[in-house]
Image (cartoon, rainbow over all chains, first blue to last red; front, top):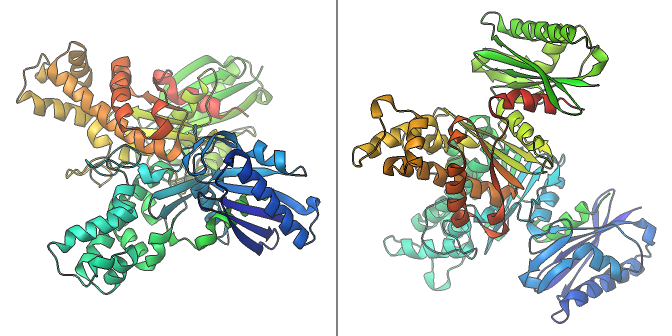
Length: 308
Length: 308
């Protein structure tokens, strides 16, 4: 039986998963703190240590490992990272670096974490689609785009950074130093700010001293007017963004994930409602679904991406 | 020596070109009126007749023809057209239909005319890029997207219909029955309407009784305030649209073609100026160039697409 490793390298933690290839199943997962010193080498050393431990524990031979996939929190182009603020990396070739510390020759693949999650979500469907768009909604809004079965990395590795597409005429500066980004309408901060703004004029059951995205959307499920207006605004801008991508790429499916999407089907239903008003031509019929792989999206996607 | 045919099937005329493959050169081109009756068969019969005539004239054997490429004015998916209003086609498999009338077995490929032009423009560069975005600016605004070297057709063949991406909050209905489309800011009608609107408040050298896109942009080149404001608005919305596509697809190049682009480098310069304000991350450096293949974009693109 063959196996792959899926590794999600974050600024705080590194998640590692060992998966069987066929059938695709998680054999074991583990999480370690991301090393904080000498990160150019220490992160790779720590990964290799964990990989080796898991292999020993399950008595695996090198020949049984089809590949190691890594998800990283920054743009990647052909395995190369120019800058990764979260990991304090500059000019790092991830494939070469990991290979240097591996005691055996191995297929190593790497991509941006949202792209990897997009790949993993699409390949977790019973039949992966050729063309898929994935949104991940959290503190930031990210995404990944699959065209003709391949992750769209683009020229500089910024492919799929759909949280920063301009969708409204804003004045407030986004983290990307521009205005009117989708993230500024659908990220966590935008959700909380808008709820607070609405509360000045509308009654609400939301406890604004302990406000969270969950509390706002829980209120929406109870038909709270503020909760519903916030949910509707998020859904509107996602639909508008999706209609832009659809008329450009005409995807087979649009997948919505990330912490904010935990509100569930009510978000999908609102998006679809706005999307049907916004969408052009035959793209009006594209299905929207919730992401399925949850917190393990990174390791599952990376493990699937590492398959030969 | 090997050859391909490039055929641009329009509602009024069908353009046909015979090209050598290596070096790629136009051997002959011809244009016939598009048949107006029984178009399900007559268009294919007319094409086969012209192809056969050109082959006889140049004493070509079937074995020397690598393929026939067709550009059509509607969405295409895997050679199949659901509806093509300009040609009065419904449910037509173009590849099968043309093959039925060809007296020899032949590679036949077909795609939407703007997609074909995008492919042709990209493949007319000294080194074709993996990822290219092409705008064609005319009465309508169309486009084509190349990702990883392939035309993006999408699920329903609507891939690359970037003239209909929503880029502003409009109220006037577009031909696609939606509002705020790029075409409504950058198409011929939008250009003329905006010039006329501005003329109510601004002095201008434009002769509004004989107004044309050319006369508006010629005025811009003379620093006419109305001409400049119109040019600037077109450039702004193109830049905004391009920044959306760039943060999604991170292309290697953006190519601007179509009749409206005949104004030349002044349009590119204004687009780039706005784009540098709009663009996110490393996508700010993507080059913009004018299309080069001009009126023959369709037949050149189709002939290149037909190469094995």
